[in-house]
Length: 329
Image: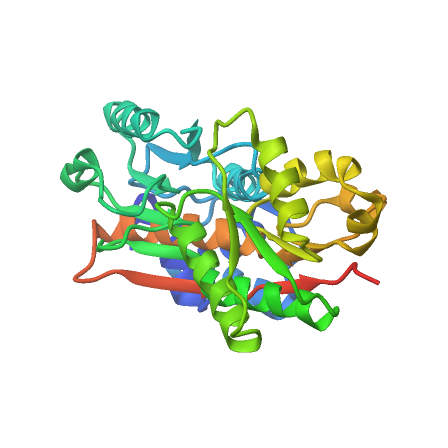
């Protein structure tokens, strides 16, 4: 193999490891076990690469990343994970925030396509239809966090239905018997699945109850009063927050609730944050492995670029497990 055609994918395949691991060995950016490091170095020697500099993916110019809402802790962590690995591999990343606005998302997609990106990582706004510009784009696409109802891309994320089911079960096990769900429109894939998971548990354990769901608007300035009235009117003792932003909004109004509701209310939300350990009110968390998701999305996109793959015969899913961080006494 010619030295100038050698890529991280070639070395990873030879060594039986991931592209990310090859990057860490070559660039010395993270600890790798002795056995794995030896396998990578042996593969490099066997393939004839003798430079000390990093191996760069040969076909990649820019990679685009479009997230749905930078306010979410999830997306902050995803961006960090992608940027760290991309930096190790000397890849240029262009980030865009769609601010949960479909029109802005379409504009972001067009802007990145005009920048001649080699591939795209996308957290789509709505699940109903794939944007036309994306259908026509001749580049690989990986979806994270959210996906379309009908597509032929790779999706990297969690089982949102099951995560919400487990989160609701966590509150139930903490003796909550009047549990509500606060989220956004179910046109968003993650919200739709999380609502279904919540409903499934409630109907299973408390079939005599109607599920209690509050739907907020992403840009509604009156969310605080809606949340406050919802908890008071429904007399909730547990709340599943669909996102970290929803949780933040709930925590902002909790002091305005009657003392009895304050003391009896248990909360579980998505995505951990260090400040949650220091709150007056305990918040359990449905924790997503964001570093692994970000790394897997980038790694698979690079492989698709190098293989010349644009899409598949049907959608594919790479699903990671969640964990529950219990902070409720």
